[in-house]
Length: 483
Image 1 (cartoon, rainbow, N blue to C red):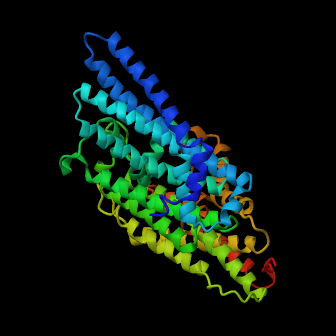
Image 2: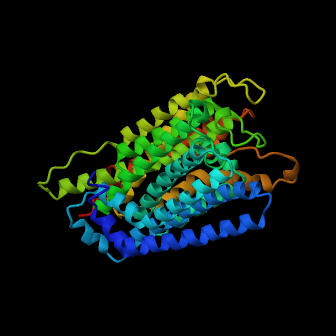
Image 3: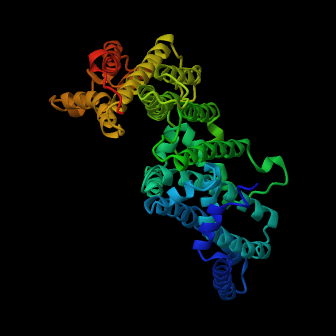
C-alpha cells in the first residue's frame, strides 16, 4: 500500500505537472470544451438525435484510448528518459525507495494528467450513454477493459524507457509494422493473437456487458492473463534497471519464464484457433507454418536468457578473479539455459500432430521432432557461448551477435537465392535449397515442409558451426575477463 500512497517518485512527478491545481483546472476546461462540442452537435442533429448520441459514445471511447494509450504512455516514457538523461535517477537511487515503488511511482505521477482527463471523459460518457439508450454498466465495463489495456501498455512503456532511448517510438514502430502488414504477422505468430486481444477491442468498442459470464469469452480472460504476465515481467525488468542501470534487465530464470510464457500462449492459440481468430476474412496459415514461425520467434526470444546467463557468468568469473569477499551465487550455466529452452519447445511440436484444418492430415514424425530439437539446442549453445566470449572482452555484444545471426541465419538462404537467380529458368522454377539447411530458418522450413528436401547435411554443418563459440571459450582462445 505505501507503494501507491506514500510514493515520493509519484509525488514529485505529479508536482512537476502542476499538482492538483493545474490538473483539475485543465480537466474542468477540457470537460467544458468537450461537453460544449457534444451539445452543439446534438442540437444540429435534431430532431433525430439517436445516431448522434451513439456516435459520441464510440467517439468518447476513442478519445479515452488516445489519452491513455498515446498521451499517457508517452508521458511515462518521457519522464523516465528525462530523469535518466539528467542523471536525476541517481539522486532517486539514494532515497530509501525500492525498484518496484519507483517504477509504479513513474506510472502514477507521469500518467496522472492523462488519467484525470480520461476520468473526465468517462463522466461525460456516462451521460451520453444513458441518452443513447446504452446501459451504463456496459459503458463502465468498456472503460474497465480499456483501463486493463492501459496498465499493460504503461508497464511495457516504462520497461522500454528504462531499457533504451526511444523505446516508446520503437513500440509505435512495431505496432505500425504489424498493422501495415494487414495483421499477417499476427496470424502467423499465434501468441500475438492472444496478446493483441481482439476480445479486448470488441469488449471496449462493442460495449459488452458483464451481467453474466457469457458476456466475456474465455479467450478474453486468457488475454487479460497474458497482459498481467507480460506486465509483471516488465515491472521486474524495469525495477532491476532502476536499481542498477548497468545490469541486465532479465536474469536467466526470468528470461526462461518469458520464453515459457511465449510458448504457452502460442500453444493455447494453436490449440483453439477459432477463439483467437482475427476475423473470418483473413487466410489462416497452416499449423506447420505457425509452428515454424513459433520456433523461430522462440529462438530469437531465447537470446534474452542466454545473454543474461552469459553476462552473469562473466560477472561471477570477474568476482572470483578479484577475490571479492562479497558473496555471489554461481549463475545458471549456459548449457542449462539452452537445455531449458529446448525442453520448453518440445510439447509445442506435438500440437500439429493429427491436425487437419488445412485439408490434409498432419502427421508429426520422430525425425521432425529430433531434427527441430537439434536446431534449437545447437543454436542456443552456440549463441550462449558466443555472447559469453564477447562479454569477456567488451560489455556490449549487439554488433558481433547481430553479425553472427546474419552469417548463420541469412547468408545460406541468400546464397541459395543467388544461385537460383543465376539459372536461365529462374522465373519458372522454385528455389532448390543447397546451403539453406545450414541456417536454422532454412532447416526448419525443410524439416516441416512437404518438398522432401534432405536437410541432414546442412543440419550437421549447422551444428559444427555452433561448436565454434564453444571452442572460443576454452584453451588459448579464451579471453581473460575484464578487471
